[in-house]
Image (cartoon, rainbow, N blue to C red; front, top):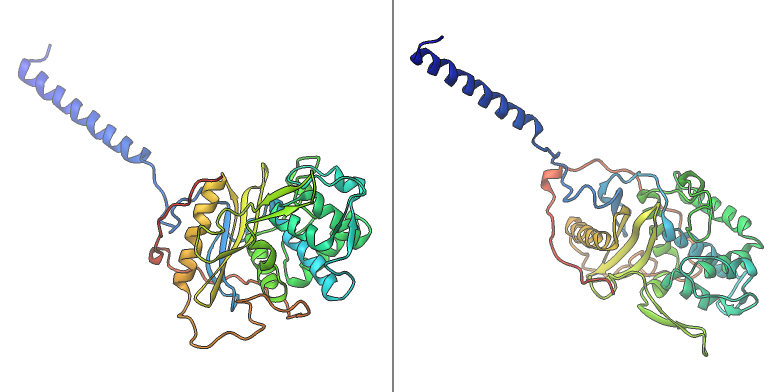
Length: 342
């Protein structure tokens, strides 16, 4: 048996050893997070911000993430239809008859009935405002004779624009029946930004994407279409472009805003919910404008990407190229709130 004094010394030594071990254990288990300059790394799976005038990358985070774009794929559908109008193969007044295939398309829709007839312009508004999948199918079949033939046009156009990591398999972005990601539409934030740049340069896409509400179909089956882009009228300068959501894709958004003669494009893919997506896009737009040089003292040319170009404009494709990563510690996070979803 140890003498009382020696026993107390041994006990104190043991307690000190236990305290040191607990402290070391606690230090090892403390959560750590890399200082990557991103306020919330779970807010999206990939994002990019681009200067619409130059195509320069202002901000990027996992910009080459590859995944489904959901209804953002409709931007390519719009481009194919618009280019047919530019070539005189269609007009805005051309009547389009809804097929049985279009009528049974699910998801967001304007509830086309088989053999119902609408002009191209009405269906383009339904495509871009209501994100109508049935309108996308009706336009695809009318333009190319079949959905498959139209998808071939989409992929050929993607390749010509330099969208090297994109494959379209639908005109609307709905998931495949197999529910396997690899069987559906696949793209990246960088490729979507390339598509957005071209749309802003060569088409009047803003004429459709800036509309907050429009009616579709006169009479008792009339529908009041509300734009799915809830940043319209809530974030300064936002006038497009396209939202998207499926379970596999998460919440996606290709957005653009014009302020003081400057235009910025921001794309995110894979957000966990619409509120997070909208808040992060708004933050990215703010940060993008902050990174731009001062606005020029002169007015932009008529064919500038700051404003929609005439229908027959055919500028060369612009590909968004990776930029060197900036020092993440220099980023400034802009905090503000987005009103709740209606």
